[in-house]
Length: 85
Image (cartoon, rainbow, N blue to C red; front, side, top):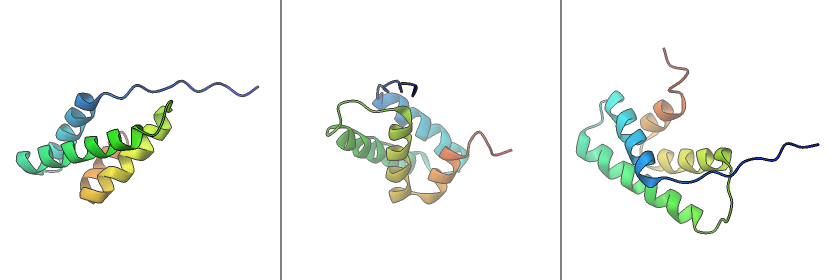
């Protein structure tokens, strides 16, 4: 029997804060990181408007695509943060 996936609740402020922290690691200026974070959050919210129920994997894919549009370095750091030593 296939395990039922849990739905994911989107928190705009949490996403913006996570992106701002990772942008600081990448030495991206504060004003630029704030702008990029808000654009990514807007893109993800727009993507969510057409969906009733999403999983965390769906959410992470949407965030990944949105970040890659604005800053490839930030996307790399955000998605490899647990793997980078």
